[in-house]
Length: 454
Ligand SMILES: Cc1ncc(COP(=O)(O)O)c(C=O)c1O
Image 1 (tube, helix red, strand yellow):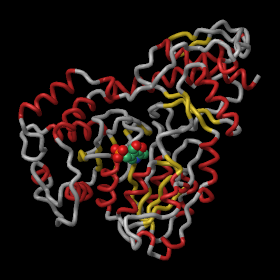
Image 2 (image 1 turned 60 degrees about the vertical axis):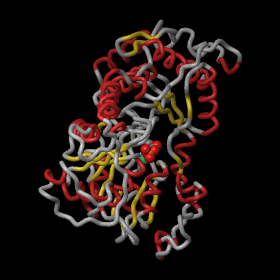
Image 3 (image 1 turned 45 degrees about the horizontal axis):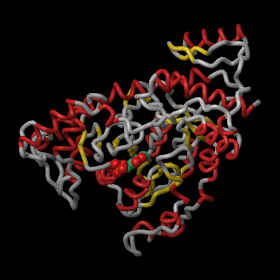
Image 4 (image 1 turned 180 degrees about the horizontal axis):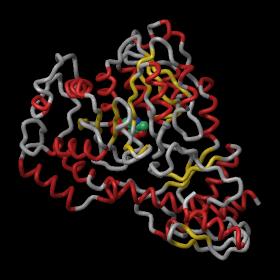
């Protein structure tokens, strides 16, 4: 427990939660004292809302656009060279080098999206028909789609209260055909990488980290995307940094890098990577074009320089809220594999029932606070197109193997995931939230929570 936390706890114990005039939050102070707490009429019941103007949480990256991105973009326009290869001072290349350095990996490749980054990573590790890949039952479509597009079979494991894949549910899903695990770091939270890597090493499986919802997150001091065999990221609008669209593939392995590089650029190995890889070791194979253009590279080169500032701001705001509500009786915050490294995009609470969760979120929204169930991902096994195994072609290899024919998706295949998500809800945090905004969030959560337990 931090010194600050201990002092705050001591303070509360000394005055008694019901008698304190105010609650300390980080270095600031939260208005509204526990003396009146739990007694105020909720806005949902006709009381005065904590905020008159509802608190919003716009996408992070664009709020930080400034002359840095502008200068990079204008340089591309003036150069009249928006295609990445063969351009001296390529912005896409500058972004790749900066991003690789930032997260601490040898190689990064800029691509067109997180989805194409996943497809590229699957191609790099050589996923194909007959192979199986383990995914969390709650994540984004792209994880499933990339595996299916390779002709291999997605196998789902349950999530736990961290909202990431439950390492205890992975091993039972492993078969002789399993080739990889994709732990998604969802909603700013990090998956339990030590446990996942231990299982992967034991069974000789690849680990591809999906960091799309956790760009800037860290696990035990290392940036996500630098821990598994490969990492992917997305720079679509709702992500930590953005160019509207965009993605990246990361690795420390030169062979995986070369395969990914070739796959994302029609099998080619252009300069300067050809020289960096001493001409390359591998032959070209059937590939795609997912190259990043120079405009996207320009914006992302600007954004990556702000990644730490954005992450720090949202993480700090999240910490202040958690500290401001820590003494609430029976409070269950989202479990975290690394609280310090968690990006903190949402302050999640888990309730006993879905009804209570829904009531809690409705009441918070009436107080003017952006509150919602876990979003940005899907319970994939219960999605219609997945449950019905719909693919590009009826003879698609994924579902032609005995395992592919036998596998049954659907809600019944992931009851624990559905139960946890049904009982979880949270407040969306933002790097641009002011101290006053943070105080309002704390006041509203305390007001609603205490009214509900009271
Ligand atoms: C976990 C996760 N993986 C992959 C993606 C795909 O990224 P993109 O939208 O850039 O294709 C997303 C997008 O939201 C995501 O949330």
